Each structure stands twice: as structure tokens, then as C-alpha cells.
Length: 420
Image 1 (cartoon, rainbow, N blue to C red):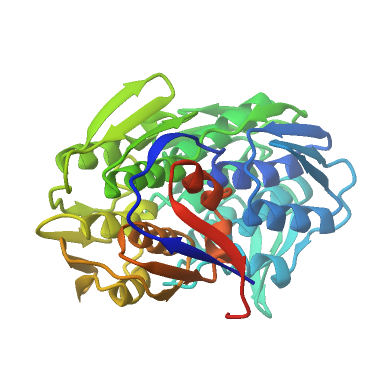
Image 2: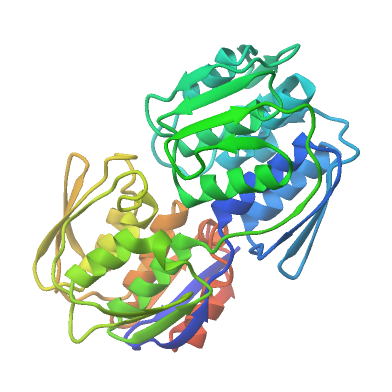
């Protein structure tokens, strides 16, 4: 086990390159199931979740190898149609293999998912969509069993624009007979990137980037290569790291259009930005102003940035409200921030942050990916030393966050620990 030891108080300055999108590559990797071939994905982040997906695909007979930021995938020898609990319990994105397996082979056995330890995130939209395409679905012993002779195109309306359900149904539909229309589809950049990857493989998808996707089924797909889009959540997190320490930080290799909602709210808080091509520089004079946010589906303020915004508002002189509408239980970072001295009250799905109070170093424990990032941000402005335990959560979605922050001037080190 490892932990972060962080001594707060340093202003961050300099440049940092943003890695490829975790949620982007985790959708593209299962898509290779749809076609026997050899694929190369570039700009792939070296993350625990990528390795988890690689091990799952390897168990199915799909060889994968990460060399630098290039991921080589050979899907020509699939021999298993099962995604066991030992893999899926670690990461919800493993559930993405369901659609491609049913779409290409007409059968799949996939464990019900795990992932971050907060709140229910049901997969019923995935299953209802596949059933509408003609799959027979049953749940036995914690596994989803799906069977279909041939999926048939149909109309599918999602009650909520679920990213996972949109991706799974889209991957299943590209090899279905006839046309599938998904309405109220998710429009997150990672879904758009997945659609473009499938199109490069030979899929016929119309309406990419909109909430209505029309998919004309094809008989087969072909191997291809692709570059993973930048990680917009890492980009937002690094911008807040610069602003919370009242420093000047430039993120490179990002897509500013993907983080418009975050930049807009940070401007409201008093941050100044210089945006040029794939570079964004943030600078702020003094503490931020208190700004309320409400999470929403893209292009609204991302739920994956909610925890980091709570930490940012600890620096603001005043009261701010952070309302979580996507996953109302996503507040396990609050008690840990309170251990640093944060004054935060909870009212249903809203955190009321009383900012401008002094924070002091303490030992805190991560319980999920983005909440762990919030603890690191809080530690950057706390007086004294903070130890962040269970950093394997943050390693799931941030590539070498300690190295990147250290390059910007943070006093942070990764050290072994027996504490769990």
C-alpha cells in the first residue's frame, strides 16, 4: 500500500501535460471485441483502470500491451464470452463488454458491476436497451446472461442520458440488422469519441455529438487505430489545483471546449484565463469568490468535478452551495475534508461550504476516485502535513498525479504504508 504525504502552502506554477481520457479509452478497448483484428490506441494513460480492463480482455483471449502511451490490442483470438466478478467489481466500465459481446457473438455472461464506493448506479438502462434490440436477458448468481440469435434495429429512448447505457447500446447496435435510433443519448465527449472510433471501424452512425443517434447496422467491421481524447476531468482538476494555491498553471494537450462549464464557473470565482489552441493558463489574484454550482449532464457542470469544487470553495471567503443532481450520495469526501478543519454542512444533496477558514494537516482517507482528488487539493492549502491514505483510488483515474503536481512546485511524495 502507498499514501501521499503533502505539506501545504506552496503556490503552483508552471506547465503540465494532460493525459488521455480514462473514460474515453475504457470505452474504446471493449469496442475492439466487435472486430477480429489488430488495433493501436495512442495517448493512452497509464492507469489502474486501464490495466484492469486489459486483464479482463486478456482473460477473454484479447491480447493487449501498453508501451508508453500506445496500447496494442489483438482481438483475433477471443475464446471466452464471460466477464468475471473479480474484474468487474473493481471498475464499472468493465460492463462495457456486454454490448460488443452480444452484438458480435450473440452471447455474454457479465458480472454486475462494482467501482467507486458510493451510491447506486443501476444498469437497468443498459439491459432494457439490449432487450429492445432482441436480446434475452436474465440475472443469475450476480451475473447478467444475455443471448440473441441476431440483434434487430429498433427505437430506444433512454429515460436519462446515461453515458454507459448509450455506449453499450451503440456498440451492440452497430452489427444489428436494420436501423437503431437512440433518443436522449448522452453527448459527453467520450461518447462522441467512441462513435467516431466505431465509424473508423466501418460503422454507420449519424447524429454524432447530438442526443439522437441513428445507427445503420453493418455486416462486419474492420481494424483501425485511434488517438484518445484528452482527459477533461484531469484538466479541470489541474486548473483548480493552480487556482486553489493562488498560483499560475498552464495545462497543455487539452481540449478547452470540453471544460467550458468548469472554466466559466472558475471565471465567476475570479480566475483569469488565457486560452490558446490546446493550452489553458489559469491565474487568480487573491482567494476565489464563493460560487454555487449544480452538477448536470454534459455540457453542464460535471459530477466528476463536484468534489474538486467543494475543495476549491474552502479557499473562498464566504458561503457557497454545491448541489449534486447526478449521484446524490457522492459526498464521502466531506467528512475527510472536515478532518482538515473544513466547515461544511450537508442538506439533502447539497453541500454548504463556509470558506475562508484555516485548514490544518491531518490524516485522511480516500474512498473514491474524485473524492480522493478533493483531499489532495485540500491538502495543498492546509497548514502542516497531510497524509492521504488509500491512494489506489486516485491512481485509477489520474496518471502520476503526484509527479505532475511536484513538477508544478507542490510538496508531495508517495511513500509506502502499512495503513489501509
